[in-house]
Length: 329
Image 1 (cartoon, rainbow, N blue to C red):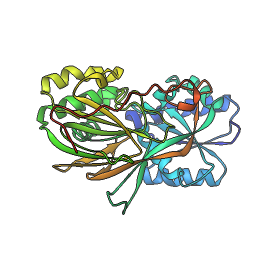
Image 2: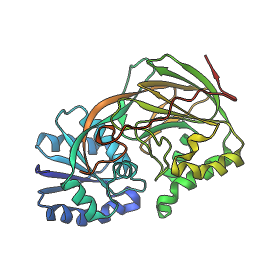
Image 3: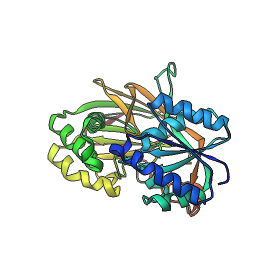
Image 4: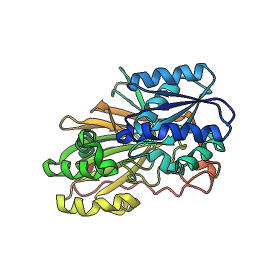
């Protein structure tokens, strides 16, 4: 990478982690021979402005934060062809950095950025069912239902919990959870499914929640979403199954189903907020669709399994039909 860098920092991310790391990251980037201009965000709209200004100045935008800031920057820069985004982990989850193989160590992450390769990456786009109104893109996983409650609680939790905030949010949400009825419509197949359960997720990437591999076979550059459905089981069984998500083994459970689609319409029998990259992004019902190659992100030169064109065939699982409490048609 030879272009000058605009290092956009959310100083509050990760309970202040990004702000503390920023001087070290800036120094490490300069040690790699890069020209760096560091700026701090005041709020998400400010981050959009900073990203657009950096692109206009011919700079590579590098985010030092969690996936929330990265998603906002990616949404802004999808409208600027030719722009390039770099990722430095500075939040609590850092899930996109994780699936791309970007190291946690500050100096190693800066070296991976300086020697990395720009690659086109998909985004997910959330919009109203009739495609009217505001549209917003995300980089990771958009989900609603039980995840809506867990995300809200996690976002309100004290900063000292660090990465444990996601487990805390899930446990607190489980106490008051009651099953919901969801409907999904997959395109271009036109398949429709209804089920009673916990969550529907539209996954552009593999992981969320600080290392939970909800969609372990999702690819960042295949032009599709992995739609993950979690049907109803008892709370104790759900809790016992929760650790399986950290290895992606939950997709083998009879209560979990994975579909691939270019877009999905999600609705439910009661209101839910859709969360993506840790932040609220819409209210059900919503349409979520894949945006192939919407942004260019610098990835480690060695590549990683989350990018289809870097290595062997993806080995994605076949679509699994709903059964049990689910009905299709």
